[in-house]
Image 1 (cartoon, rainbow, N blue to C red):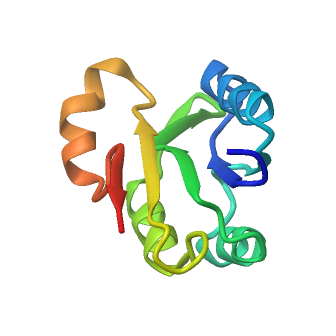
Image 2 (tube, rainbow, N blue to C red):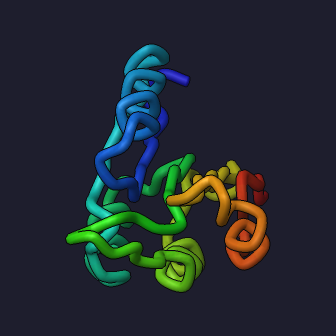
Amino acid sequence: MAGDRIASVLPNMPETIIAMLASASIGAVFSTCSPDFGVRGVVDRFGQIAPKVLFAADGYYYNGKTLDSVERLGAIVAELPFGPKGSGHSVCERAARPDARSKRAAAFRFPCASRQ
């Protein structure tokens, strides 16, 4: 919805661009930060806008290594103020590797779930 705030903790991947374009198409404000930010940095940045939706990846590749973000994302979701009180929010994640999706999605507390 126009004016809604959407945040993402995504690496450079096609879904990041898709999320930004989808946000722009409905007139929402889109804010992003790198998945290598610490929990405090993400919460400080997104806490200012109280996003209604958070897109996140459960991991990313850097310097030839796969880095896990699941624990950090759980802490971020637990601390973030989402939207106006009572509006609910959605958190969607995507696995860094397709073969890891089933194991990792089960570990992430809110895969594509909506909370009130």
